[in-house]
Length: 294
Ligand code: SF4
Image 1 (cartoon, rainbow, N blue to C red):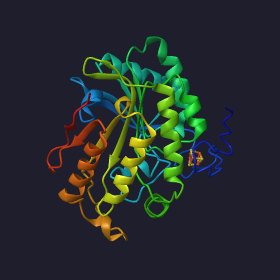
Image 2: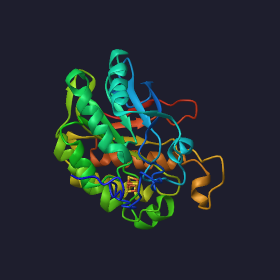
Image 3: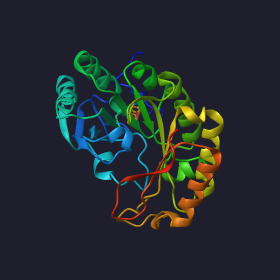
Image 4: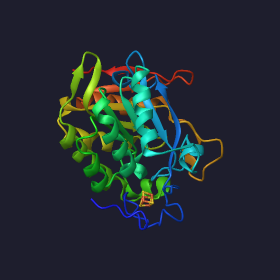
């Protein structure tokens, strides 16, 4: 695929920014900015393992959810500027530090450069590559990643166009993300394990939002219908935390009630979905196996 950096239509926003002169909706120009690259123990257990996931957090974001917990990273061009070669070296440094995988977090808007870095590093890279994203991916981005990504870890955030419009200004979110998730599954196929670590496959994350449990259930219904249940994992998250500043939407200024999260979790069990639930106590950031992985 050709990528015109002077008229960027890389992601589904298709904002057309000239990234050589300004930044796009994603807040990014042509510099690769990495906010953090380090071992991270708090991903799903099959990603974190004993030693941690080799996370690379990219600055900027194509979604820009109003409740984002990482807005200092996602809404501005912060972080260290790396060349493609330095990014490839970062992957190899994380591998040398015993990372279970290279976990590329919110990198969609840098895909052409990340692909170059992966191609440079791949001959020496012996661990899986994880694409950790908001689910709002274009077919072009996924085509670039085909053959380079081993594990897709997308969010599936919103079901209704109204919610997606209100919270992330993308009424086409579900239409786009559902197609993207199908493509991701077609690329990587059924789950492949190395002991307790995932080597290849798809994990779909969903954060239960306060006031939206019916939408959560509709998303789970779609997943159960669209994908073979035993061939992917669901990661159900319940730790929505209101941002520091009050939001206009009244639902988003409180945490999800235990009842809301539990009713969605029970629905996942009824549908026969496999995967993880999340410990809901404020102090704990870890995952608990809420439903058994076959
Ligand atoms: S990647 Fe950024 S600049 Fe390109 S279309 Fe998407 S939001 Fe616009």
